[in-house]
Image 1 (cartoon, rainbow, N blue to C red):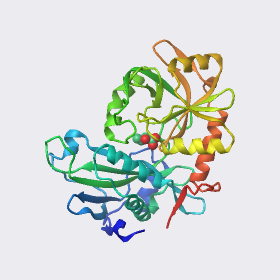
Image 2: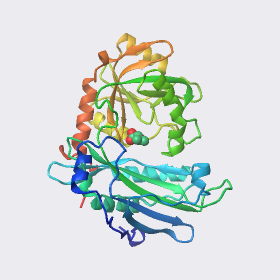
Image 3: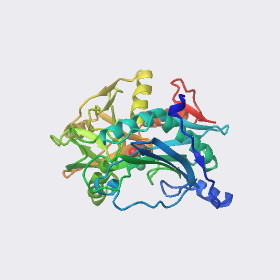
Image 4: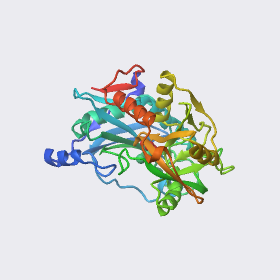
Length: 365
Ligand code: COI
């Protein structure tokens, strides 16, 4: 790695970390996103100094000026990736360079300073090394890593901030959905949309998620676990399930998923599934798919299985679809065979239980 792309990361050890007993209790049943490790990593950016002041310090509250741009105009981006404990005790990361690249693209879209890929990867590796005792066993889950970056100049004018704060926190995680691997029920949102052409749909910015919450509330009010967004121009074409990409298994054994085109988040899991499915000889079509056609295809039996995918939940079967007009069941409400095979193939690579023919896995040493 070129020296100018490397950071010198200072380390301040937490003087009162969780005890081994407290940690083990958490690691047996961590839930998702509720518990955090003993430390956090910070890197600052300014126009004069570039990336500087990288340090790992005890996890805790941070003091911020209330005038920071991020609080007013939401100049913020984030990523999500995981560290996995292999059976032989090795600690593995799955395609972290893909997250680093997406973080750069998100930064560019939000007019923020992009953190170089090498620094992103160095931060992830060094931080996971510090928090290595916080990895749950395979049977429980992973250590979920949340890098994020905020605009950190105190200024109320609407313009791109000249200063940024990058942070990395980690949270031991079990299943993302409380239902685990059970199929979820989705609501098709006919009014709310997630992203329009020219907007921020393919950036992983907090604002996209904030704007999705009211639609998620509508789904919950209709007794659904999740929602499916349609496109903003015609309210016709399926885009994403909440914050996850969506796949359809058709009766000819092929896979169909909406194409990326600026409004859909380019998921690392989505990309991995497409690659692996094609290698297995499965036809994968990235094509527009109308919600109305989806319902017809469920009724005719053309749609055999449907699943959503993302880093947090990996692969989540969809068993029921609800709209204002009715409720439709997929595969008798059970997880499909191909859905389960894809899920297993992916987590086997992530946990180091299957050969890594793509060089997707990096060991933290
Ligand atoms: C993921 O699927 O990994 C997500 O983006 C969900 C996350 C925001 C919790």
